[in-house]
Picture 1: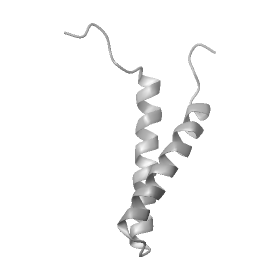
Picture 2: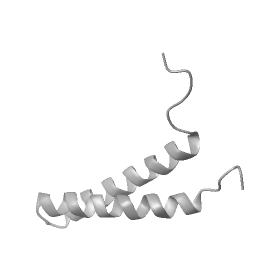
Picture 3: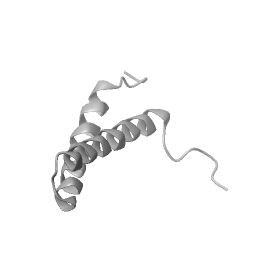
Picture 4: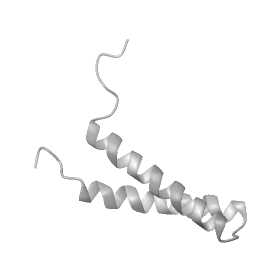
Length: 63
């Protein structure tokens, strides 16, 4: 058994917000008529940018 959590709550929140933002970007680009491959690329790029953004935005408890 694992004796601790694999992610801190802050990390889980940052990744969740990144996934939701990337998913939203992919869905919106799909609704705009973009083909599926580009939707996945848009979603992945937005995920990376969103994780970086939310990592800086969400305050670290140690600071």
